[in-house]
Length: 194
Image (cartoon, rainbow, N blue to C red):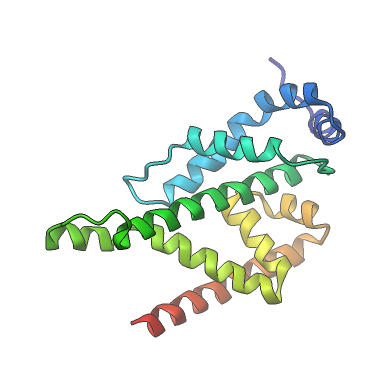
């Protein structure tokens, strides 16, 4: 099967956005592998025993994407940015639920060794990052979106610039500043929590 051109993907996205469900049926096999790669990249950053699998994450994101009413998709990068945002929300919701259960929602006795192992759980990192991204978005929405698209969506600087309709230099600068701000904010929050 021949790889579709970017203009064909854009046409299918626009047709789907205009209510053509057949366009969605044609689109999903084209973008599924890429969505799965994004999901796998997300999950590599998670703890080893994470209960979500890449396929389940893609399927959940797909269900949320098809519920989007009359989105005016600009292009493939825009679609992947939105899909990445949805995957981030799914993972954060999953992490918050996991942390809630861990803190007593499904309380069961564990040994001290098991408790120490649980403390190394990386779901808290994702929740901290999500909280910091929300704080960043309150005063600089674009930098928050750059992080979301680059870190979570795996979009290139060029693709991110295209979606946000800014220059590549702006994306590179925002990416660098946002990473520094997030690092400082997360570390400050950890120090205050100690």
